[in-house]
Image 1: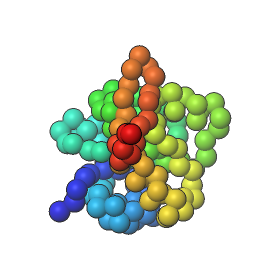
Image 2: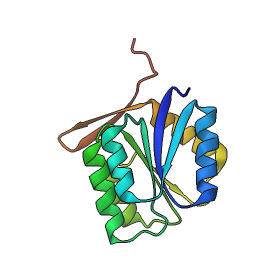
Image 3: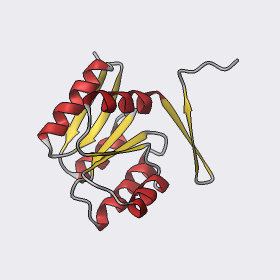
Image 4: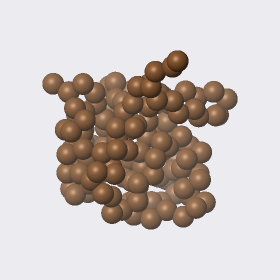
Length: 140
């Protein structure tokens, strides 16, 4: 039994394999969904620590769906995967509450580190300011 769960929205088999390998090493179950409707419904009904959205075929609706996902689960870390992202779009994605943007190709060890950081992050939203704090660090 896994200690935590993440939800992944993608059709990319290679990326699914990468995510599941990283999740297994972190004792995190990766639930894979292939359509946005199922993804959003699952966000409402499950206790995920991390959301991962494949925006490889980025279009105008991708940013809208990122915002909807963050409205449903504002405190859940969001990792965005895409082939390329320009500075303007990357800024908009981060402004929407993304924890990290991964550009293809993604190194297995790097992705595992990103997933671990996202899993351990506690995200607090205050007046549109996002504060990323590490739950695992102890305060003196």
